[in-house]
Image 1 (cartoon, one colour):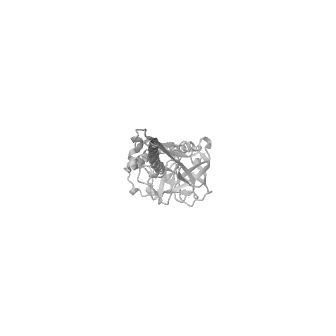
Image 2: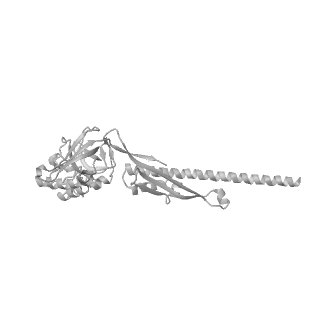
Image 3: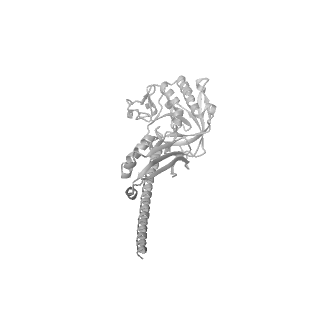
Length: 347
């Protein structure tokens, strides 16, 4: 009888310890689960913040990461993992992705610590994709792939055919709806055009008095600037430079290139030669890359950039030899749906 009583006491103690152990395990697991989900919220918010900053504000992975690092300082958990979260970008694969990873996070639970056992190790990762989707219209306020050309604004319809003929900025006329002009993006100037020391833009109705000509990039000396612009055409196009218009305006300086060497054929010949080289860098030798799509800046009646239209270049005509009067550049295009970035959290 006495032995049976002792056995019952031992059995009770065993069950009591087992229940405590079970409860402790459940408690630790719940704590680890809650911490995992909290960490997952951090990485989810990280990739969405990074992606939105990159496509909506500026294409700078460094600045996007810096913004999120500042956001982490606002919470205790964020401060804890600030130096261990890792960001990675993939602009090679389709679709583009951004990933945030927290590896080997050690959760110190009460019972594991009490029993002198190892920490729980948590690994968390989130990924977002960055894609482009078609809009129902050909015009938009945002571009993630700009060609440094401008065309005068009008009513654009998907499917419209536009044969865009190149013209000097100095010959700009808002009534020319099928003419394209050279544009500098990110120009260091407070004007909607870059001044030229060879041409008085006030003759075209430009408000030159409102410009601060002392700013670097606000004036040009002629052929050298146009040669530099032409060499940069494919670099600008391939860089997927983003630009965002709000209420018809953009914070990114955009200037009509003001190169003008005089009202003579040498000007035309020089620019046609330079520009044709730059265009071939985009469309490929003999148009090998065609068809290609590009976003082109639209100009309002004051020659100020006010938006974007998307076109597909299907063919071209370039005559860069012969008599100057016969030299010309024409891009044969079709208006297509504009693109807008779409961000999706995939895991």
